Length: 400
Image 1: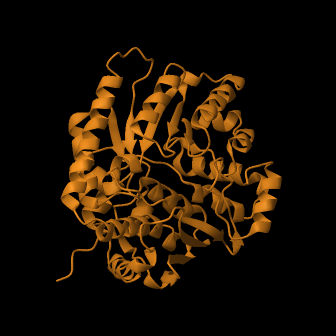
Image 2: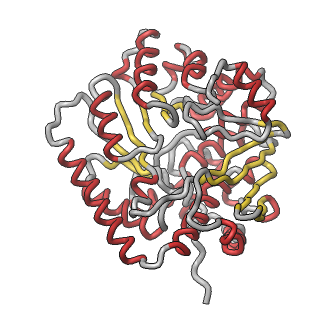
């Protein structure tokens, strides 16, 4: 008898997938895109071994539809529009748009087709591969869970002890961003239930929309790199793609979801485009690569240069955070600007095991290459070196 599919609901995706999905459906419904799976580190065994299981899980995913209670939940979010909910009521993933193959020991997954039909494969692919990988790797799941619980208890104690003195201008707030690289769905459930019970004053929500619904938590998220990257192929001058993306976001959400992502072509290039107009319209910025302390200081200096009080804005940190690094960043910035922390793998897959560093990134849109120029080594992914060099030149980005 086969086990139940890993994907429990089409709602079990990151919130920013839904918000970007809505914006792109309204503004660029005919866009076509290609996404490629990539593992950045060396797994304990070849991921190619998972091919048949991944194929089976994708078959099951493509049979699923949104349930009415899930559609009703989305409709109650004030920034989700009724026509988008109507679209989702008819939506089903198309199996022909995603293919799985192997190249030696490598697992190759490619999704290609209309962007509004393939963009949301990403999160499901990542947590499917992750859960299958650890099922095969772990021989003593009870011991792994015991270690995970011990480490979770240590995190809870660290927050309580580290914030006992108080005195900061703004409160410490963190959220779960760990869906894509979690150890398992059952462990994810346990982690969030425990945090909501033990740290209600600090734990503020989750990017996992289905668990937000199930556990009565706040769904958290705005935009990801693919939203801005796609605008590199939407017919605007390449130099202007960031401003076009930000303008489109403001037009779609009109004040909601006001945290802008800064690192598609690096923080310095982003700030050159993030003028007084956008700085007033957006509530704050999200960090996802480079030194977070340097990044935050640059953001505060930029607000001050524009004569905007930093205390009125928020910095959200989300790059490979631990609870320790989150608290260190909080202590450094909390008296100067509002902060938030999206903690991923360190919450949902801190089990004493070496984790997979897997991604599924958009590499082309409307038939042309797109890319992210990260402020961290190893995060740039692009199939076209000529386009990558041109993008670096246009935005004076020096990272190799």
